[in-house]
View: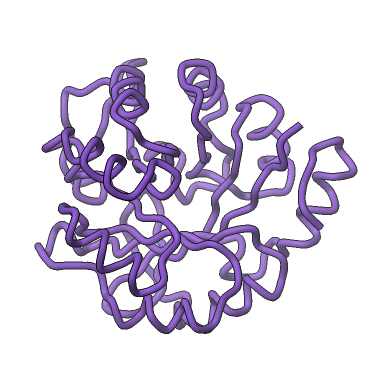
Amino acid sequence: MLTKRIVPCLDIKDGRTVKGVNFVNLRDAGDPVVLAKQYAELGADELVFLDISATQENRKTMHNMVLKVAEQVNIPFTVGGGISSVEDVDDLLHCGADKVSINSAAVKRPELINELSNKFGSQCIVVAVDAKQVNGEWYVHLAGGTIPTDIKLFDWVKEVEERGAGEILFTSMNHDGTKNGFANEALAKLSELVNIPVIASGGAGTIQHFVDAFKEGKADAALAASVFHFGEIRVMDLKRELKNQGITVRL
């Protein structure tokens, strides 16, 4: 069985780590570089940094932060927010990022996925999908969840895989920040539909929620923010319990 990954996520706004509920009501969670170093030392498998206002503010992800993080951590990290070209990705990878996450730009111009995959390899191209369930159907949203589309989640992830994405980061907007558990039914369907890793995001509140995401949702990795940032769950405590419940993790 493949090792399941635990991935702290740092949402960045104005150079600080922030966390909200359902993508709004943000509160400060600390310095992203300091947090990154702590997570690397405390057993996280990977990190994700999302510059959550870059797309809305029409600017690029902060290169200085990426450089500083690369100096401090020895685990893979993904950077997303405002990425819309081959040049953007080239810059971030040169700054030390291991992977990049694209979202809105991929929906607006799906050929971007092909271009990035062909140039850099699918292993470093993550397509993030923010989706909301409306009347029983999941729809893709853009620009940090602020712009709804009529694109259906399950159609989109199949296209994303076909175009060369290496991973899918699925965030349920309905579950984000609620701490009521991940969207396991949707996760399980995603995992059946595609042959690339699916990262679960949105809703972590207890250790059992992670167990459920792996067992019921068939996720390859589970991402969370506030439960880690505010000390509600410690990464190694989580991993030990996952191992106790028969889930393969790196200790």
